[in-house]
Image 1 (cartoon, rainbow, N blue to C red):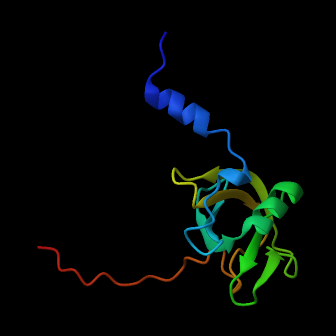
Image 2 (cartoon, rainbow, N blue to C red):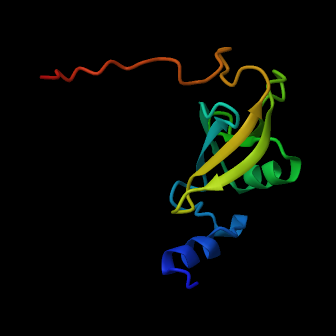
Length: 127
């Protein structure tokens, strides 16, 4: 059975390393979406530089770059609400990551399960 070009492209691009990631587009940072591996809920959005991605790979726990503190941080280091990495997925452009995690405790610094708990109203009038 012959494989299609798309199947071959997907297969060849599925074997990635950190050198394949595009840190140039956003000043050395990649957006990282943390998702609960069991429920599929989006927990938070943070950013990672190359060092944070490498630390995540080495330790098996989510590491991010704090844009406000300008420092590397391990999620849950102070609170104990760690994110154990189950899988790291890379988007098709190589400039966004999805961390599938086992979350212990709340993901949000407010104590909420997810950082996405507020709603922005939709003002569109449906006819």
